[in-house]
Length: 176
Image (cartoon, rainbow, N blue to C red; front, side, top):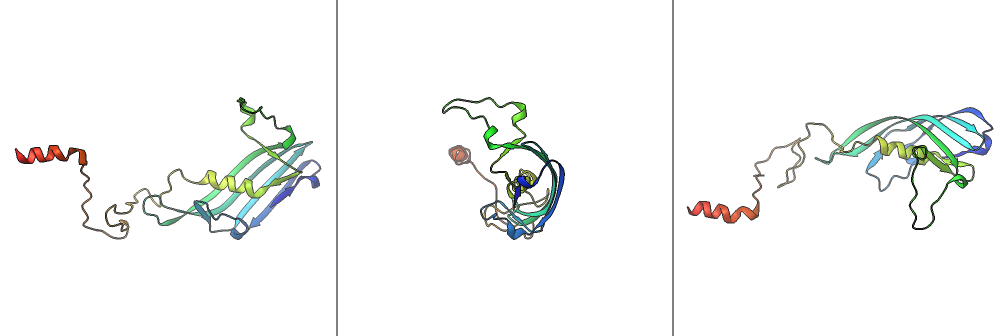
């Protein structure tokens, strides 16, 4: 999934590729790819600056944070990234802080005239993830006592929590 920049001489080139889910190594990720990934990119090269403007489309599968059931997350993400050669990166001396300028935020760096499109797509997958993955707004989650999925079954578990620090006051009340 490496983009070889040495074959681009300038102006604009277009890349349209489809990657199967198995092409990505996502073993320890919080999501799974369940559909092919469509990548459409315009590559604009100006001397050593490279600008990628494109779109990633696929479907991810996440686990609900309340009930742990898997659900689909569609990804239709557009991006506009500027890449500079790794040698142009200014680094701070050891222990020194370096102030980031506003221009630095949207800049990435490439090395050996190659850009890893896999990393560009992986970044878009992360950005498409919901902050709190829920299969639905009305998800009722798991019972904290018996562990059943409340979306599919009901239980008679008592879920009222009593603060153990208040137990002496409850006993005092019962005594009176």
